[in-house]
Image (tube, rainbow, N blue to C red; front, side, top):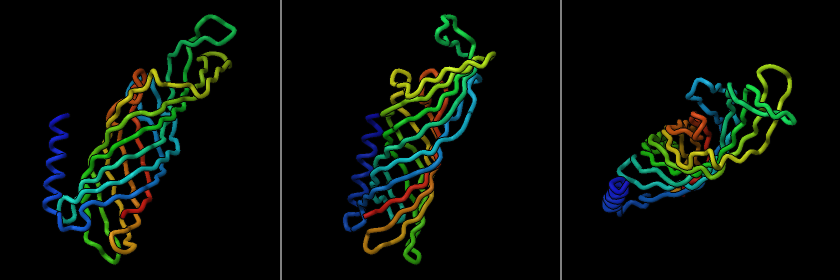
Length: 226
């Protein structure tokens, strides 16, 4: 970790010296996003059950490295989740006291604070439009995790529903993602531009300790850069 921090400091210092005369050396902006989120299972007892609408907002920061290249970071607050089904769960259905072999359908909701660390490559401005691509990753923390759970016995019609279950003891606090995206900026004059970007975020770490699945997100982002 110390080596990574030192490398980022040296990279920023080099960029500052190289671009001291560039009025666009540092840019910042705000964005909002929406898209489709889902959880990809990684164990035999889990089955994918559907997507959820995700949304988020955040701050954008860019440091120019060279012509048409920049280091893009900031922070994103994302609300996402997914739906999974697990077979082979022992559950007690009140007023009975004997556990019954059941299947569990869970509708998960997560709130993440992510910090993207990406390289942004862009074209020269063409008729007020600059096209770009970003590639890299992000690291983040889980701020909140809840689920609506529905237990169904494998034989019989009885069901048990538990809503808004807090998963703070089951969540993995840290996560890592791979990120790739493309988009455009439309010049509004000077260094100000409107931003539109389509991104794919692929989870690299499990979101829950006892449920082996990663979170993926296709997001459409809109923002403004200064």
